[in-house]
Structures are given as C-alpha cells and as structure tokens.
Image (cartoon, rainbow, N blue to C red; front, side, top):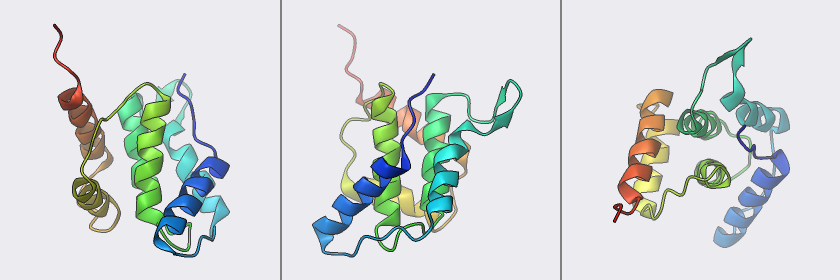
Length: 135
C-alpha cells in the first residue's frame, strides 16, 4: 500500500515555498486540495485507475498543477508534492534541474500538453536514468 500525503503537509510545502520568494501563503480551496490528493486512488471495486506508484504520482501532479488551491505557488507545490510522494514511497528521482522541473510542470498544468500516462512515463524514465548501474 502506498503512503499518502496529507493536506496539512502539502499546505506546509506551499507555506515554505511562498516564504522563500516573499509571496503570501493562503489556502483558497481546501476541497480542491483534498480532491487532488485523492485522485491517485481513483477507481472502483478492484480496479485502480492509477495502479503503479508512477501513475499515482502523475495523477497527483496532474490534479494539483491544474488547480489554483493556493493563492501563490501552485505549480511549485504540485512539483514538491509529487516528488515527496515518490520519495515517501521509496522512489528517489535524484537531481532534476529546476528549469526542467518548471518546464515539465508548466506542460502538465498550464499547457495541458501532457496526459497522465505521459507524466507517469516521464517519472519512471527519470527514476531509471538516475539509478546507479549495478556493479
């Protein structure tokens, strides 16, 4: 079973990210945040819409990046939350340059040019590329 992020933890990520840039932190849509955090567990019966950890992280990023639940820092918070979710579940993406993360989240949340399956694949490939070669 995967570990989930809480709304309180994600709100704290947003507070810290906004403090770093001098922006105001405010949660504008608590229900929207809750919905985004539940999205990775969508399904019915035994069917999971997002069965792998990468699918779940992609659904989380996709749901959070497309919403304005905070006054500021929504995309940064979406990225931090997805990376933390993966990390909490044993997946370390390694170093991702800020410019790459920014462009990626923009493609997900603003341009809507990436589907959840594309996002999941990106997470998985990034993880695999960052793993050390077996000796």
